Amino acid sequence: MSDTAVKVENVSMMFNLSREREERLKEYVINLLKKKLFFDEFWALQDISFEVKKGDTLGIVGTNGSGKTTLLRLVAGIMQPTKGKITTEGSIAPLFAMGTGFDSSLSARENIYLVGALRGYSRAYMKKRFDEIIDFAELEDFVDVPVKNFSSGMTSRLAFAIATLVQTDILIADEVLAVGDAKFHKKSEERMAKMRSNGATVLFVSHSPGQVQKICRNAIWLDHGKLVMSGTSKEVCEAYAKHCAS
Amino acid sequence: MFKLEEQMKYFGFLKEVVKRDIKRKYYQSVLGILWTVLNPLLSMLVMTIVFSTLFKRNIENYPIYLLCGQLMMGFISGAGRSGLSAILGNAGYIRVVYLPKYIFVLSKVVEGFVDLLFSLVALVLVMLFTGAPITWNLLILPLLFVLAFMFAFGWALLFATYGTFLRDLHHLYNIFSTLWMWVSAIFYPITIIPSTYRFLFDLNPALHYITIMRNICHEGVMPTEKSLIIASCYSILMLAMGISVFKANENKFLLYV
Image (cartoon, rainbow over all chains, first blue to last red; front, top):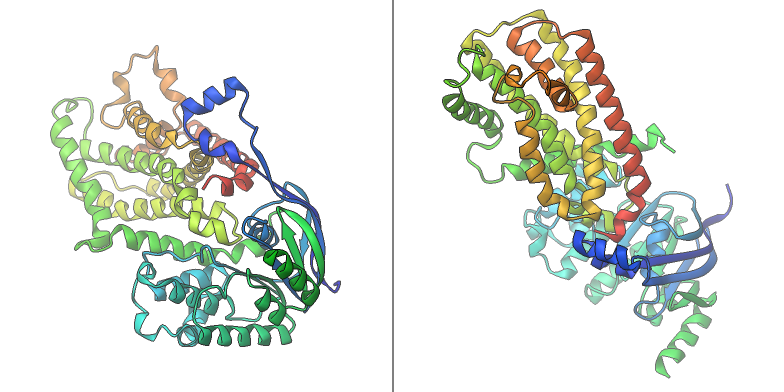
């Protein structure tokens, strides 16, 4: 057992932008003949290295398209890096703003069981914690409403409530506080603080340097897939805010 | 790296997904799951009316002959069809959580298998009604189902992989499955095929599973050792092929969903 929770070594991630055009057989063959198939390479991340100690909170800042979410997806194990290596230790609770793993045609109740099963919890266990989740997400009146009819705030509240249900070793939070009202922000910040004090490592992505500074001790700054700066969250956030203002 | 312990964690999810899909299939239908029994019964009835006069002399107890073929073919061919959308249809999960992706394909095959088991009720009813031979050979049915399941899972993995990369397959598969059904001797006796061309039909894996099922439920005899060995070979080969193709490509799925 080392004291490092997440270790990212020289990680690069390449996407092939031409893939959209390969989906039809005819165009695939044409492209193949033209030898254009593997052209539009796009490097979303280039040679990123950093380490997060256990119990630490790392903020990741950067503009849109700088590779923040890609980096988190790699750490969560959803994607494999093109180059480099990522090592994580302990259980991971991923929380992405762009999608929550909910089946939108099912009700909140059914989604709770489904996502619970996805994370490895039995139906019986989820049943026991059910009221607690609904209570935290403030969805008492919407338990049997399909998630597709939820507002974005309601969906992210539910996602947050499920993801932080049990203590995990690594919590990955991507723009989770971008939606929801101030009251819920306060509640979720408290819950994250509690998880942290119980030893969880947090990777926190946000557009808002203010939030990062409040929640994280250390931070990194990504720009166009490259690591621009790493250090304490105060230093990084101030430099980033300056860059954005200029 | 395949750690059973780690995989077991996901079986709870598998159960929930299968439950969800079955529930969704019969959502708001009055008869619900009863349709899995009624469907093969009714289509068997239609086919019997159409074809039975044609093959009356060649086949006795045509309904059972037909049902065996239909159920087995439906399971195998359906596995490929549902495999095609197994990855695409679960994009919502694949984008946000780590999960062994074969679980989504397995859930589709299990769903088809549950359907098959329910339609056995229809088969048993018709067997009793038509006085088909009920023998100890029926005990071989579970073995046949295990073999068919292995084949269907491999087949579904194959189409889950290529269906994700090449959407045209979804349209091609319909045509292919119609052709497959017609070369699998479901409606007609295999004996009407000239013996010079029979070897071509023997290359069709589905035919072997169907023949074994007919041996057991239609003729009430023990399937030959040779047919069991051939079927086992097809099952193992298809499963191995499906797994290796799927494994080689699963990390690329995310870029295509």
